[in-house]
Image (cartoon, rainbow over all chains, first blue to last red; front, side, top):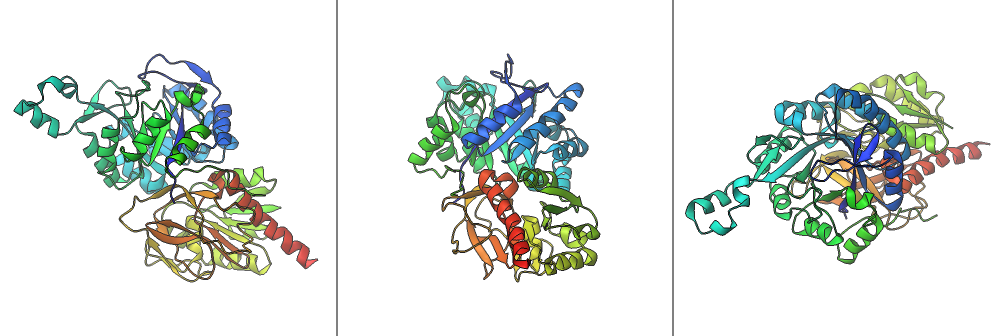
Length: 277
Length: 207
């Protein structure tokens, strides 16, 4: 049976892992290769490395980081942050990335998704979507019953923002996910900007609405704080995988404990290394 | 132990190389058929489209791979490389596989999420497989594919995603895995080690 994947995200800046709260207040938490090795040992199913600065200078550092991580771990490695072209992606693949995550560049030029899929295969193309509940829907709870408000609530509910989290690029996260799939995305990495860094739980409604609308796997991200949060997004949220950073980095929940919790609730997870002698 | 990894431009060769090297073997990326002559083990990796190996691995390569097997040396196909060991694939109906194993690869069914991405179990494992020796019954491997090989007499493990397909095949010294052993943690490294020791055993038998 296909297991639900637990994915650790390493936000990297200049060769160091940092973790922000709501994309701000970056804080150094350690060496990427050492962290990745620890997670692989603990049973993580996949590692995602995101270059959170993605400046020209950080490119070289990122290549070196990916090379070191890929020599250390033998689980799938996804890399993203500032990938603007097939050539950018090729350098990361050469350094050891199995999959490439694209975000802002795909929003600016959606044909990039197709070009990446043509070059590396669609299984290597992850389209990252940063979604946020529409501003006008966040304040409207008291106004339910108003016909105009109700009509709005039935329409698209989530905006898509660029990676920096400052510009609204699309008005419907579900439609953008469907377009990304049609253009060649092999997976959707869906981050709730409302929940990211808050540990208030994943946005199950957002995740379910996207997952039900596409035929490719959806990775839920943003807000995972407790094992219960993971169970919720993998069931009612219809997520195929769940990604977290800070709860793993800070040791608040170990990968092993999390997986045992999920297994006890009947969710398919990979519990052991699989080698018997 | 020299491992030749056939590099025909289908990605992930570096990952396979790193995994083989961790196991103590020497790995080289083979870009010409002649480079298989010194290989103890030949690996055909690959992710992407079936037409890539079908078109790029021409008669020169096919002859070299068959000669490699005739020298008593094992061959391992990984993912797309395994599918290429079969006769054909619906992904590229006009392109021919190597045909070492009978059957045609087909697309996974539409009612499940495709690509099939993630860790899945190896089921229906007959006893005595050299390829999967030492794996526990619960062993899971990392898969990432859209097309899959059919069930048949050479299958030593099946996996289900929508329907059951060949997760691993074994016929003499011809081995194939739909999963990525280089991305399947310790269990995957064990499979690679098993293929390396298939070569070691052949050497001992010859002595």
